[in-house]
Length: 76
Image (cartoon, helix red, strand yellow):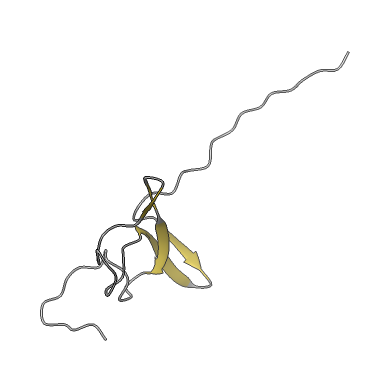
């Protein structure tokens, strides 16, 4: 008679906003996508079927919105 073995383990952690990972030696951060300047509703969050769209951007780059604001510093 065949036997069935059921095993359980820890589930994979779901990615969240602000998560970080290293890709090819570059630290990336996960953030919600926003409409680029020049488009209608520029700066608005992009959604698909009512769910947010996410992107991985380089930490500390101009696209990283989690970096602290520094007064008097212009982006290139």
